[in-house]
Length: 304
Image 1 (cartoon, rainbow, N blue to C red):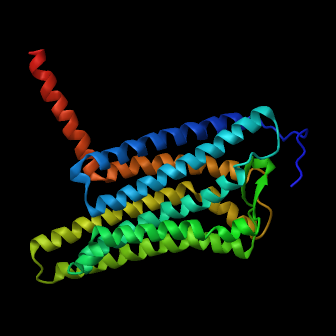
Image 2 (image 1 turned 90 degrees about the vertical axis):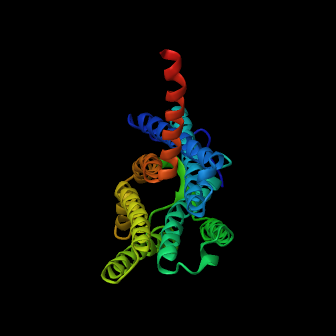
Image 3 (image 1 turned 30 degrees about the horizontal axis):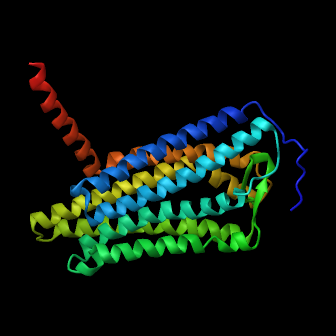
């Protein structure tokens, strides 16, 4: 690829504020994710299979946040210098971006499927084991790195000057449909399907003579899946600009700065996801509450 280092990119007054806002959003999200991951590793009460799956979601958010931070930092540097050529990691960041979005969405699916198994197939202990779930997690990570290879090998991930990043251009093509299916439609559809099947199963349990403990456990798992669905809908809502631009590209040219706008909402969704994950993951909140109570008990006698 021949690059003209003397050329200058278009410059708008809102570029720099958008870049800084994206950087701050990703920093906040990554710091919160790291805190949650440290708590899971440190607190023995979090050493469960369900928290293993939660840690997988948090780890994917950390990697995704680091990638988004790198993209925003690169865009800020190029905007400040008004240059229009990529650095040596631009294509790689674009590739890892597709990887991490899939890992993020598939991690929610794994959590929902696990909770469905614990309710519908309680005797299949091998499916609920940490060993089996670790194998499933590793498989999703392997697939996550494999599925975007066609985009990389066909050189569809390119430097887009107006957006100061490397992505596949939004247009109607087989690879665009393929990527959308792998990243969004299939994982989210499975998660929503699991939720509705679990709702129906719990309703049927309520009509039968089911032990109270079993029914309460099923309702608890349903509650957790419902939280995952809320999380997904929050992500989808903040991702509406990106989805809109994809659909628009099937019929006409998307806006000139489509990725700049879409990625601003994407960075905001990352911060939302981490706040929601912390709020929805009871063991994390319980750990913080325990630490605050211990600290209060230590401080109060010294004050009196």
